[in-house]
Image (cartoon, rainbow, N blue to C red):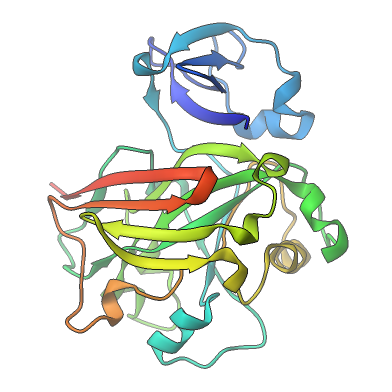
Length: 277
């Protein structure tokens, strides 16, 4: 199962590569910054290896550190719709994140001082490999390079200041993304996998991807209608029920916690939580 990640080389220059056992094969051009986003359209498997590193030599970056678009889908599991008390709509809720919200595997999620209502949201992330506009549902999966994991952590009170989610979804350091991308064909039936979130080792979310209200082909068709999708764009497909904000009593993330999102063969995304200083 071929896996890819983004990292900083030992000299601090960003690049990306393929995991080969305990080593990482650098697929970026030597001597310059290199981004997975820019190589996806031509196929990562065709790239020559410019260097090889031990994994412990590298500092991971968010899987796609600089996507042109991060499209997040809200209310896409019936369990989450029910716990929020909202009506299921005819079309998906779509909101955006900015790249400065992203953190890598192992890096801390940052709770801002403006709120104590910092919530987890484990999600399957879809990575676009082939761009397009008005992509038909029947051809949508041809545009998927692979899958990764997203923790769409939310500052709940700021999310609900008004009808738009943007403020509560874009505090810096609140979107964990990674650690790796697994190629689409290597995953097989992605709907058979489960999205499981653990807070300090306790399972708080656990639901199969097959329970999505709007499945991946529909999301690609829908999103590519109102915006052109480009290689490296990310669609975070929505979170299952079990969020901390809707528990009794509420269960929010705080400094010292660790949150993990596991999705079967795709892997596990693990991050500590700190307070912003």
